[in-house]
Length: 68
Image (cartoon, rainbow, N blue to C red; front, side, top):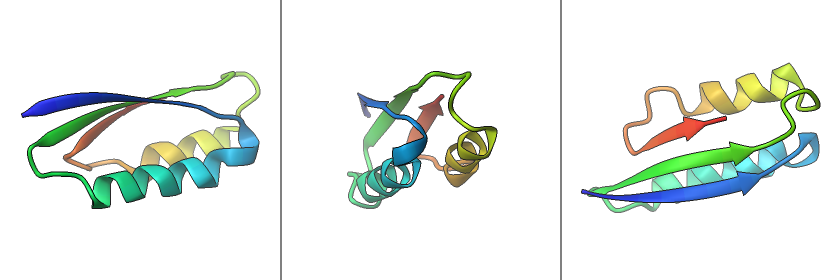
């Protein structure tokens, strides 16, 4: 199984777009590929609600590990 690191740099304005991009990536991923997804953000400025949205959206997803 290959592992591919993916990095996003976001703020509160692009949380939804980031989620859509990750969803599309996983929907079109090869079965033998694993994604380490890193999200770079200013922790003090990213709203807690937005952090939860991203974390909960990919809980239990087998094809990736999301690090926020």
